[in-house]
Length: 241
Image 1 (cartoon, rainbow, N blue to C red):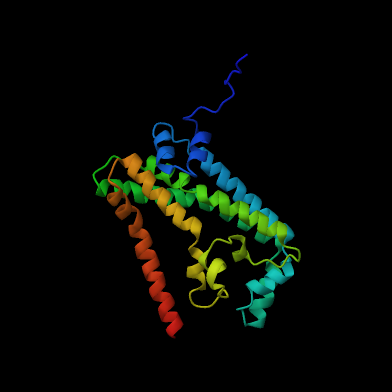
Image 2: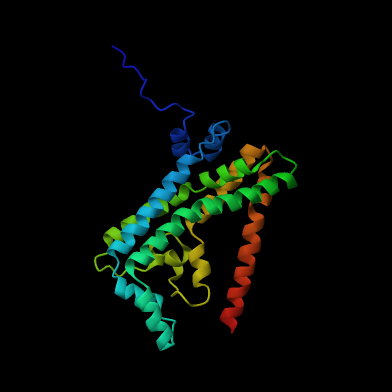
């Protein structure tokens, strides 16, 4: 007797789009054209980010971490005051709040940018589409967050730098420059997930705005070129000083 398939996930469901996003983003954004389901990537990334922050501060050697965080504070009085104010629960709660609230905030900022980008290209691309595009471009963050959880799990001593939670950054993969030195922050901000996220933004804008790939690339890459151009120039000047 033939088995029924009533339990199968519909091909146009948000969950099907989520899995398709990993291997065929153009098709995934096409599936989401009518039903953008922005809640799914938002809840997943916010939930996993909160779990990572909680797990990290529950496991990390907090006294060691405080010393690392305050290594550049040379004034004894200021250092003592910072140490007394910096409790594990305070840092944990603030980190969880920053992770959870920062994600929709960045999506909103990106949504405004793509709304402006839609006007620049004379396409109907409102804030809602821009916000949804930003949310779905967070899919690579699911991978990096899971890798971060694994990093914490594999840490036997609890002496794990915050930057080590994302092992896919250029600094963690190739350069290993100590934080506080020129280029370190820049190289920590660029990861394989960042590149993947930019690609998703390009593809999503192309599909939803119905513009050529070249136009989607120009609109998407402008802020990255400006921001990283300034950052590279600053790092070069800091390194030369």
